[in-house]
Image 1 (cartoon, one colour):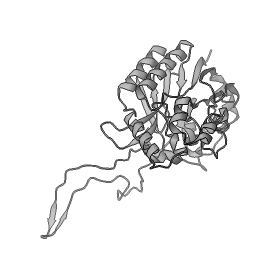
Image 2: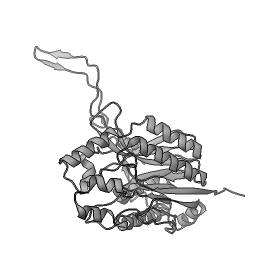
Image 3: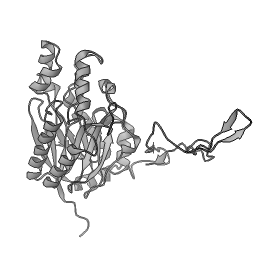
Image 4: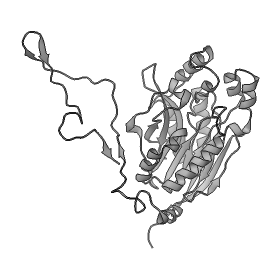
Length: 356
């Protein structure tokens, strides 16, 4: 009889946050999760920085003007701690929906008031937090408020139907990141996008669709691409003038939520940028088998003797504490017994990297 390939329903949420209101946006997100679960979704994807918002004001304001400073302060005050009450509420909604949820949040380090990350939180159908992915390199204005993510948060997560991964916005065009996730045999990939791109960009929906098809072609995974939208509350908060309001009112500057199969066919969407909607598609993993018969870049359609990728998953710490035993050499010199530094002077030539 052989292996079974059950159908798994995917959902992609296109919606605006309750701008810079953590509690209200969490409540909205939980309602959307339960709605998607009631419609049979087993995987539910949300946009980038959905709780409490993405720092799109830097497309209109300088980094240190009064408006940007005020909005950035509100972003921090409304950011999410992991673990924390917002994640607990999301986990309860995921459990009620019996679905995997990938939620975009602005994350802050617990008990601090200075550092934020652009993060995707992965939650299982039992309400357990599977882990998180922090955006490796913040893009353009994000760098003013977001720290680069930790190397230890990169990679796919195990699910009942195979590995699932996620990247945000421009990360989805990073060829090394794409290959690393392909080599982890990701079967479902979640792309998360903000409310809009800068004025000089190609429309976000066009880029998102290109990236979704490209990722599907290379990985042979299903791609669930979720984008946010702009509402009146956002326009009022960030627009400097009538030209900004007009730009932020164009349907083509936002949206583009779409679900793409391993054969690059569009299964649902794209959704225009002027409306909120949940789209659904049934994922038949047998399609992935058929596509990998043609070329499997993590297997028979590659040359490990020619190409090799190293991925460092060691967490970087800014400070380490240790106990030292000084050895005195004369009256003014002492040598401390420092802890060994991996990959530095250990005699094995290692640079602290692990194969992936």
